[in-house]
Image (cartoon, rainbow, N blue to C red; front, top):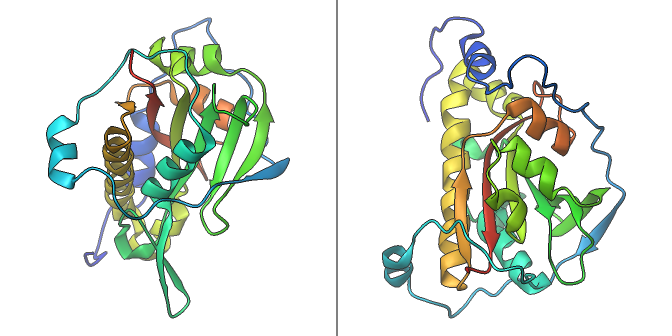
Amino acid sequence: MGNPGSETPGIGDAYQRATKYQRGPGRLAPEARAAAAEGSETLPPPQTTGGRGLWDVLLMRRSVRDFRRDALSREQLAQLLWATQGVTARHHGHAFRAAPSAGACYPIDTYVIVHRVEGLAAGLYRYNVEAGTLERLRAGDLSDAIAAACLEQDMAGEAAVVFAWAAVPERSKQRYRQRAYRYIYMDAGHIGENLHLAAVAMGLGCCAIGAFFDDEVNAILGLDGQEATAVYLSVVGIPA
């Protein structure tokens, strides 16, 4: 996906740091937490046949910001996760996913902040793509914290779940150097659109979030903002 060629050293890293949203003086971001897995949750297998047609889903797609307080089922969450990054085929030792990735570098990790999902405790989870499971990272109600981190957008605390995508730039930089940042954001966009279309196909509401305080979201996810950093979020729930 392009020849690295010559480039200014570090320009992608500088861009990532220079475009962060930060709070004003006197409001500090919470301390970062180590994102060590506490266990894993098995997920139901995805449905791969039937459902609404693609053209119908594209026609119906709208951003939804108001949600009922109903919970999602484990089956619904599993289907959404599979639609974003689930393994769709395996050939010659390679696992191909539902969303494309430049050079098959897969620099994006999926985190889920669960507010209301049947059979899942509220808290922070990470999607293990290869195993098709959710790794528990942190228990507790994070609705107020994530809403505040998303520039006080209430929908991040009111939806049933918040999907948060974090980039591990080195996975792509090994191949594409500083140009990797272009592809990282493209990858995140592919994943986000897959989620949005899947949600519409399932009768759910979804809205993407690009405005957030980077350091605060990274702290919630347990990321350092350098080796791994949040790049994109979406909320999903039952439309009001």
